[in-house]
Length: 535
Ligand SMILES: Cc1cc2nc3c(=O)[nH]c(=O)nc-3n(C[C@H](O)[C@H](O)[C@H](O)COP(=O)(O)OP(=O)(O)OC[C@H]3O[C@@H](n4cnc5c(N)ncnc54)[C@H](O)[C@@H]3O)c2cc1C
Image 1 (cartoon, rainbow, N blue to C red):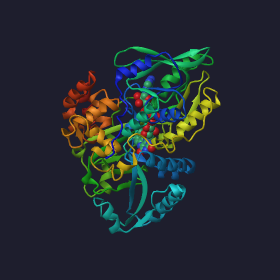
Image 2 (cartoon, rainbow, N blue to C red):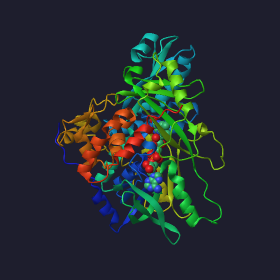
Image 3 (cartoon, rainbow, N blue to C red):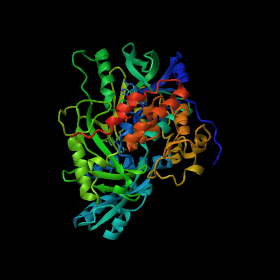
């Protein structure tokens, strides 16, 4: 293994000291999910000075709760959204090459139980291949019944006629978010988690920065910036409404919300329910939705749902009907039907779907998956919508709009197209399958750094060592037990009960490393949440 230089330290006291320095940034970003982090990297790679504040932890919101697919979105073909699919397919291949240990090709099989399914879906998937062109990951193939069962050994054999195999990608979403943050930091951006944008600063009616609050201490800081980008996911309307109230055209009409949140639930079961390293895709469930069974980090993810939601909880709970839907539909396609008692973890994410201005309805399935960039009268830039896969395209569009509005100058784009993310040193990343149980492979070319830390041989459970917790605290911005168990390791998402038992041990190591409260009991409550099956 090659010897690497020490990575950048992420000591909180140093980050806060930098935040307190009086200076003017080019761009201040609110929100440390896929959108904000992707923007931070693109902007700093173009030479802009960048600060990003995240009210909780990086990827605490929707960006750690995706279906883990780096995809063009086969189902958007059905909606005729060719442009969106083509763009996402291009981005899929860029991501796979820039973070090969975190994003990889994955074969999907669509099992067919009706005679017409193979030709019907085959046409769509062949078009998908054609749209990918040179960015294709493999050709769509028609499979016999025997071939289908060889790839999906646990699929329901009764009535199975055959299948179609196609290629897309999968990834480790929260670790990719951290890789984006760390790569941006290496280039000079300042990124601070547990720091909430509380208010905006104005100069002659124009946004000139923000007031943020260290949520661990309550201390407030004023950040001057030429441009402020609101990338707060489903929570963008909060800052938009503050901006509207401070600077609205007539001050009487409240700013209309632009986000219609839609909830998506996933449940996790043991890998034996699917068998093998091929994902199963059901293009049309009994009620017309798409269902995936995806092998991921040694387990299987089943999901998802699409349920309108009117509140914006940070930890939304699944509805009983959603769990019933996933279990009932899975039972139709799997030899052994997963039961409630088999569920290892349940997690729920909120899609930031962008509302058409005149839409008051509840039909989120029909809303746009494309992103929207808005600039308010006072110059607050808001970006939301889109998909994880297209974060780079979103960053590009935001910077174009900021330049058009003369908030910053126009600088050459495309700078992140070949920019390898931290941990992506080519020599060390081959053969690290994301389907495999968690372990050192999640660190790519930084494995040797982890192995060099105290406690490298002290395994807290399979795939998580004391050294990994120390690495998270020193180099990956981790403060709390949740940061480590939910997003640096993915144990909370894979096995919430096991994660809960490890909390005190992880907390003790973190306390030693950072001297900050690792919030052990808060994690115990959260883990219960991830095990809660509504009756
Ligand atoms: C169920 C589901 C499955 C999905 N599956 C896929 C998939 O397989 N592939 C794919 O490409 N896409 C997928 N998506 C879409 C993708 O996950 C989202 O588009 C993406 O994660 C949104 O990122 P974001 O940064 O805009 O939002 P978020 O990740 O929610 O980030 C916003 C951040 O802003 C922070 N914040 C809020 N208010 C403030 C404030 N005042 N100050 C500072 N910070 C603040 C929040 O804490 C949060 O971390 C899925 C989405 C869902 C819901």
